[in-house]
Image 1 (tube, one colour):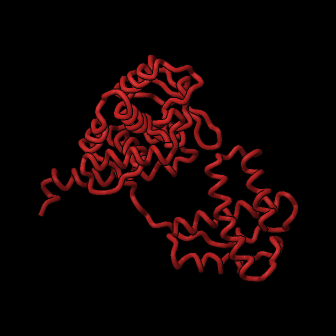
Image 2 (tube, rainbow, N blue to C red; image 1 turned 45 degrees about the horizontal axis):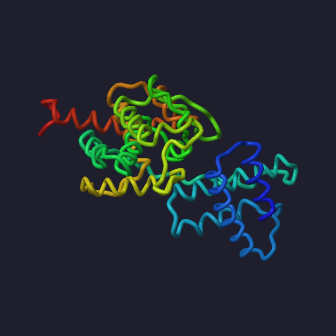
Image 3 (cartoon, rainbow, N blue to C red; image 1 turned 90 degrees about the vertical axis):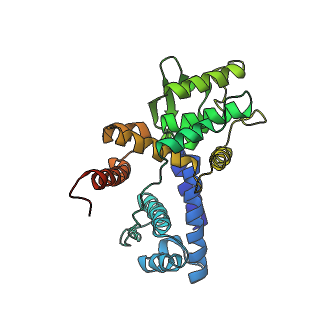
Length: 293
């Protein structure tokens, strides 16, 4: 089983060009499943795994995992057996007949205009780390990019005069996103302070002069959310949700938002329509004379 997992992960990384972060998630989920299989039958080979064993594994996960987490693990198992089927090691995929748990419908949390304005201004624009932090926050909100996309960006990815940035998304797919006026100004100041580094250098640096990591970005967002006395923990991904929600509420087309976010499927983007509908209902309840008791 473990050998099959490693071969699958290598295939996903080299032939499917899946991101290292996604491959690591696959490996983690599948290693947990392999441990369950080893504990269940002593020496069950990967070819001997059936749908009943997979269902028993999912039933065990229900004790301390959310439905979305269970669904993700089942998706990884399906992908592994699909690969083994294609390689001729299996005659059928035992995971295909296992139903995916229905996910809880949770609306993505987003900041309102006042909150996001306060967050952008929290670091200030003095030279050093405050200016760097402001550049991180402004870029995440202005472009709606993922944290991994921000940390991977180089100086040459930016066209500040044209207000555009080239982003490498999931699966190595490249897209162009706009960079807003405020973000462009802060990035220009930040790069000027660094002595206008070359196009091959990292766009955002840590305090030691190396490329900023995902964890460092999360700490930056946490630190400045505390400064504005936010009521809840906010992740860097919240700024991506906020970007999409504000665009939709401003009248942007859902297809355009899909392109800006780099979503492969429109169904992924449609979750933001629920937020917009909630906002419409709130306006209706306040404004319509027959809506109020």
